[in-house]
Image (cartoon, rainbow, N blue to C red; front, side, top):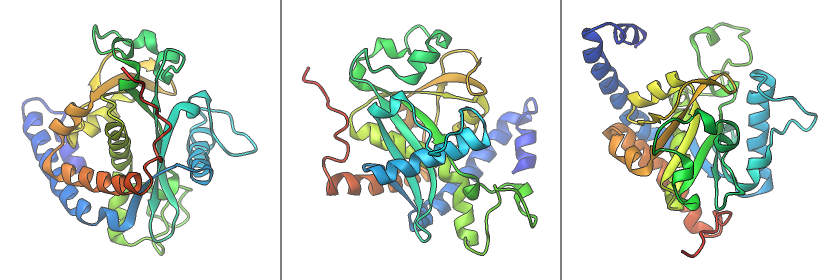
Length: 283
């Protein structure tokens, strides 16, 4: 796969190689979707215990590892936007450990700004795809996605005594390890599922362009709506609608998305008030 990625950057042949990469990724997704839910479960953080787990992952990744925010004694990374956000965690079924988190910041009034609106609104230069152009209850921002070191597998993690990013292969099976690179994708799909459940149509996110390119390989087609700026690293504003997501997903990843939606729908049906943080106004 690494060789294919290098070839994808070459002129002429690169176009064909990108098609091959998509086919390979799609094939892998079909296999992973078949057993994804056997090992991983998206969970809406609807109580204080789950929220603390989410904030703890964020502290580990954003404060301790990346240094984007200051560390604190509580080891909980929080901000003003968490009050009007829905949080989701990915749980490893057999160990009950949490493999990642993401939040969906919503807005019901001008007083409830999205993080992007407060800190990076000037970076958006698209004439129409701007949060100020949509009804407040129809927009959200996907942010604070974090996957702890324990659930990231890299080539450098295979030797004994690797840093904190190493996975203990005595605890996790080989099949499970194949799922872990898809945790971030599963978290984005969880965020999208929650947004769709609340009939939110427009999502914004600040991310590295290379991450957007990686997501494009699986059919998640974020549209860049502004230049790269220095915001927790080199990031740019991106936009996606619910229809863009559904139209773009390849068959294999649609299957994975359906698995994620099924898991979250069960939680919502079992507790109809689980997403009541969002109160849709009467229009």
